[in-house]
Image (cartoon, rainbow, N blue to C red; front, top):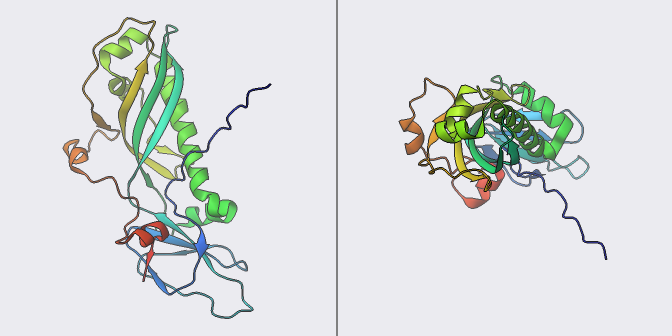
Length: 233
């Protein structure tokens, strides 16, 4: 009997909520833009404060909305079996990164992506962030010996290797990175674990701000339903 191979799971969507039917009057909340799909024209961007009006005519196509947060969010990046310059192995690295969308005031770049990816826009952004940061981290590790990485700390090595400031065709700003968890190789000589620390990529940002920031919310909404929709009445 052949053992079933588990399917690879996609990362959680980044920046977007669920694409859903617009069935009530609503207003776009601060910290959010809404992509409007009507099936006839190109996707449109609605900015904070603008009113969303559903289609009341039965012969016209229904309107659908996709909320997108413009606030800073946190995302998890996991890498397995990372090889160092001297052939050492880091079994698993779990990073936490701070991300923010970059676009012009009218969000033309986001509109073009929405035209192509529709409700899968958040998945496209998540895959791009994961892939580009993974390449950067693996490259940084290949430039350093295992013992030197342990001595300096992962954060210091990553900082000196210049993690990218922007990813996904400069649509996403990488504002900071944290090492959440590391599984070092059992074959290597153990070293004491360094205390948990958070690092901003931008050297001119005050690091004390990071410790005091509330990074848990991704949509600026006041109720559970509106947190999922990104719009409010």
